[in-house]
Image 1 (tube, helix red, strand yellow):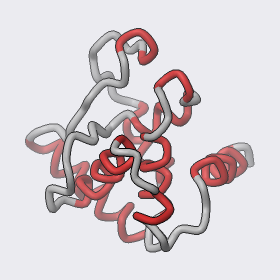
Image 2 (cartoon, one colour):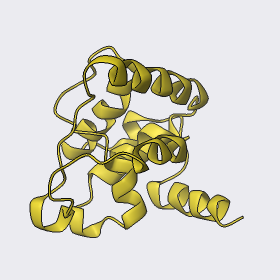
Image 3 (spheres, rainbow, N blue to C red):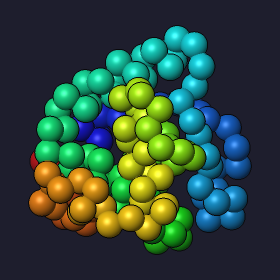
Image 4 (cartoon, rainbow, N blue to C red):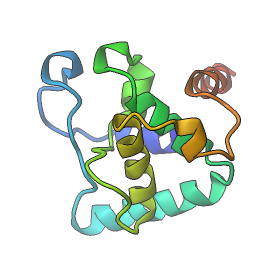
Amino acid sequence: IIGAAAHHNRHHHHGGCGCHSCCGRKKRGIPDGANATLIEELYTQVASLDEDQCGLRLICELAQKGDHQLTGREKLVMLPYSGESAHDGSKFGLYDEAVWHGQEERECHAVYPLCAFSASHIMEQIDQLNSL
C-alpha cells in the first residue's frame, strides 16, 4: 500500500534542495487542481486496503524519528506529508494527520490500535516483498 504511494511520488520532481539532512524534511501538502484529485483517488484506494490501519501507524511512527534517523526508503514514504494539522476530511488527510500525531509524540500504537505491527516490522516486510 505504502509502496504504491511512494512509487507514485518517486517519478515526480518536487523542487527544493532535495537534501533532507541540511534543509529539514520538506513540508508538502496535497497539491492543487487535477493532481489533488488524482492523489485523493489514490489515497481512497490506499485507505480501503488499509483496514488494519498499519499504513497509518507506519506514517505516525516514522514521523517520530528525526530526519537523520530515517532511511532513504522511509524518507520516500514520508515525502508527501506535512503533518501540519488534524484531519481535513480527505483520505489523504487521514495519512497527513498520522504524521501530525507522530510529530506530537502521541503513542501511535494507541492511536491506531487495529495494527499489531511496529514501523520497523512493516518496513522489514516491505523490504522483503521488494526483494522478491
